[in-house]
Length: 188
Image (cartoon, rainbow, N blue to C red; front, side, top):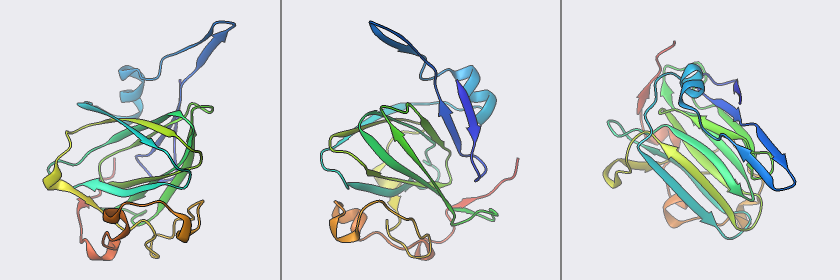
């Protein structure tokens, strides 16, 4: 398992090894010891699974407010997505910056997004299935988001705005400058 820190502190790209033969393959998709050596102590409490039928579906940019903030370990088991994390930790030298990676069933990559980040993705294929582990339970009361096309963030989504498939909640979410400080950066 290869674990690579990305340009924004805290984000990790994880590439599990697949061992295959004529029957198929085997892969350790998660190992607590290796993961925690790179990310620090983490306790996952819930697994989520989403299916997006149409190519160009955007989900995000989401986060949960404190004290129910969530870290997410994201992977794709069918299709492909353009996965995005945006740093919203007040005082962070990378505040408002985003990192985007392609996750797919083919490339087998995973993205670790700690609490303090917005998360969103755009499907690059039809019938994309995304599985992610989270560090706190879903809380409707703490569920929040930022508009997917916030010009201050400037994400180069791989779909034209007119063609993006969005929920009404994601289409009308506030801008980053409207949500105030939700998290505080603590350098390691």
